[in-house]
Length: 256
Image (cartoon, rainbow, N blue to C red; front, side, top):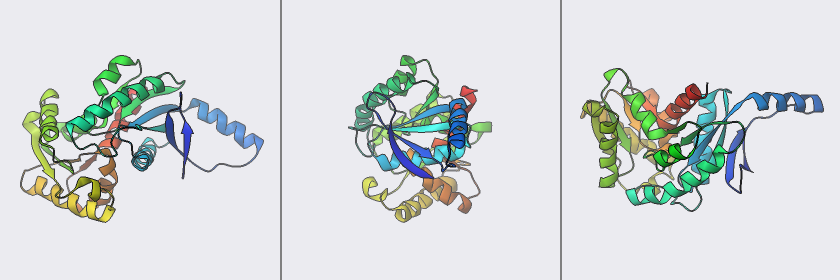
C-alpha cells in the first residue's frame, strides 16, 4: 500500500491509504464504480502529527477489510502529542471544525475522533447528522465486555487527564470493572519517536496492569500507541485493546 495526500474539502488536508490497481480504461471504470459503492469513514487525528494520522489510517484500513474507505484528517495547529487536559481543549475546536466539514462530503457514513480522550466528540456529535465515535469510549466499551476487569497502559501522566479516564468509566457505568492506569516513565514526546523504546515501556506497563491490578484486558491508551498493541499482543494472554480498531468496528456496524 502507498500513502498519498489529498484534500477532503475546504482545504482540509487528508491522508488516505490506496492500493495498486490495473492500468487501462476498463479497469479504471470498474475501479471507479466499486469505489462509488464503498462507504467512507473519516478518521480525525486530533493532534498535528501527519505520521500519526498515516499510521492510524493504515490500522483502520486493515480493520475495515474493504468494507469502507478510511480517510484521515490531521488537526493542523494542535499540539503534535496530546498529553494534558489543556492540549485536549486546544485540539477540540479543530476536531469539531474538521468534522463538520467532513460530514458535508458525499458518501461519509461515520466519523472517528482518534485520540484517547475523545476531544470534541460530544460537540461534534451534536453538530452533525452522521454517527460519530471516539476511540477512547469504544475502547472502554470493548475492554469491559462481559463484565471483564480492565486497565489502561499509556504514556500520559497528567493527573487531570488520568482522572478523566476514571470519570469516563463512571459515565459509561463500568467503574466497578476499572483497574486504573499504568503510565510509562520518561518524556512521552521522546518515547513515541522510538518504537523499540515505546514497546519496552508499554510492555512493563501492561504487565503491571495485569499482575498488580488484576486487569483481564488492557487498553493501549492512545491512537499513536495502537501499533505497539499489535506488536505486543503475542506476548500476553489477556487482550490488548486497540482503540482505533474498536472504533472502526463500531463505525462499520453503525454505517450498516
